[in-house]
Image (cartoon, rainbow, N blue to C red):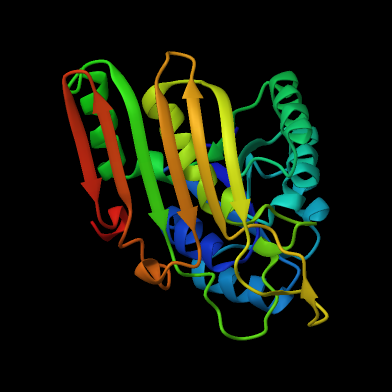
Length: 277
């Protein structure tokens, strides 16, 4: 491996730019070496802005670049499996956006392939890196509330309240699993981080908004509201809800986020937007 970890980024979305490129630029020990996107103009724009030397429109060509050490996959979830498997075949370390894959079977194959390849592999659950949630986890580890027995996580957002007739792949059931995979994956991960492995799940997934297919027709959409009851292996339980059609969370603001954790010796309660600090 070279002195710096040379990274190839697959994806040119606003998230690829604002989370990955903007944070990795100038980061010690990292070189942003290549970027891939279907829109060559957008990929070239980001390459010029963040100093990436190579631009690709075919991810297979990027992964064939023998100068790379690692790949970051920031694409719609139906593309995670083929892209990650190809990166692992190329012997690269991999960071993949959540959710890990479109199906559990695909995710299991990806894990086995990564272990077989002997490379580092990670799904990017961003909230584990926020000071807000790290502080909660430290308090739990320190026994601040004693034995935990119930968690309530409520994440309302409003990014799904779009009035225009536009296609959003998040709601296309052929490509994604709606708000469950977009935000529900985060609160499920946090609940597991706090309380351990999940033993049983009861869920209700609903779509309230009108969603449009690429051709402009109305499609049967993936969910924009997800409610879950979780039972944990340690006997604790949790109720989780997230939505993309809440007025309280209109836009990308998470103003109504609530986390309440009950234990035999106390309660932790937080609310607000953890991204604001």
